[in-house]
Image 1 (cartoon, rainbow, N blue to C red):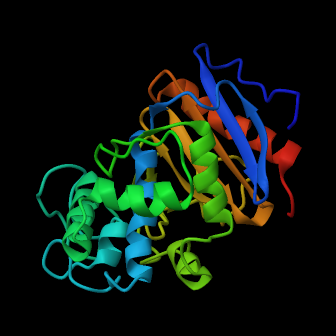
Image 2: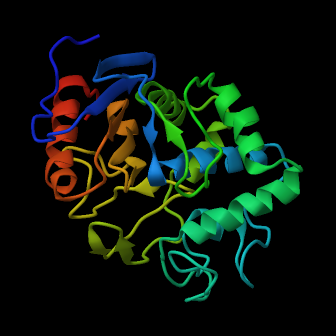
Image 3: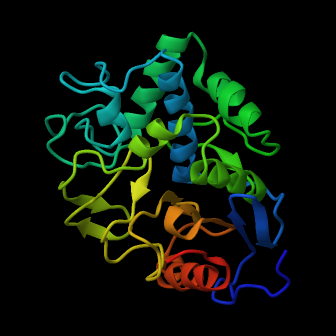
Length: 272
């Protein structure tokens, strides 16, 4: 463990920060066991459970799900056409990138039907037990209702650095841009010309502005949440980091998360 703390003075409320490489946690500060709302950082966890259903042959990425013409792939990539909330369909599948909580709710219902498990039970049996997580509460919405700790998010991050629960080929597909070239709004950061997403994971690409750092590789993927949470995975640097705090996302996060990420990368990052 590193002993020198990464500066978090800009956040005038309790926060927890953790960093891990594929072999294990290399740094934490704050209470790594404290449980916070994850908000939309729930989505990568829910997506991992869906991908495990795909790997087990219970779900196919290209089978119909959601509105007419949409598939599981569309739901995971925020291209099914749903708006942010509600059941209104605003676009043909694959035509626009519309960030949607509804899409993940529909995804969960689809996986429930395919597996015969309630989604919280499915996530508990696959992701929580598979990664031996101790603090994660998955009883809420798969779009934004989970609660968890830094130590559990780092375990998820390590899995997404070097997968053990899904095959490498499926992991590569999930972390590769789906429906490339689509613009769209990244909540909190405005319209992005190339609003790149994989299968449940936001991909950094060339987005500007962005919540990750200037030093983050374009391959970086993950998610942030309106609770003031993030989980990013940078395969090029063999590193993952998570942040949780007691205040919801706002200007202080927008202004300081990129520098925080760059400080983490400078101290712990590998590769180029």
